[in-house]
Image (cartoon, rainbow, N blue to C red; front, side, top):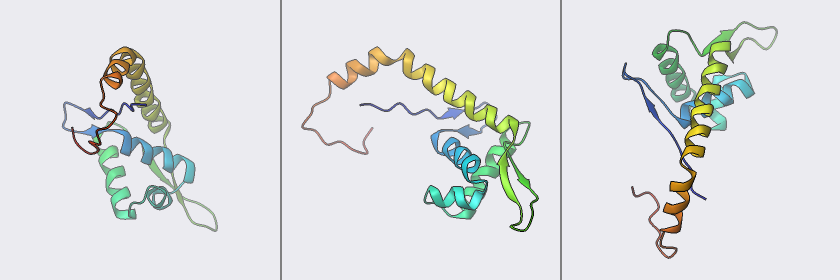
Length: 120
């Protein structure tokens, strides 16, 4: 089955796509930038830089640090960050639905013997 992925390029030069959204979802699941990064096979620094890009791109932060008890603090999505993820997933789902016929037609046009992985 064909997978539709979207990267949104905003007028201010910022971008958000499936990788950053997955990172935000992983932060929501783990409560930690480091753990989220590890779950995606990336370094803490890379994960932190992506979070910083997201937080700087918009008028409100998507991720915030939290002070904590004996284990120290953590990281969480803000309400606005959860909304950003939900809006991205909505755009993704609506795009998939709007393009079902075209995607199905393109799949039918594929040569089943070709192995063109990684080419556009």
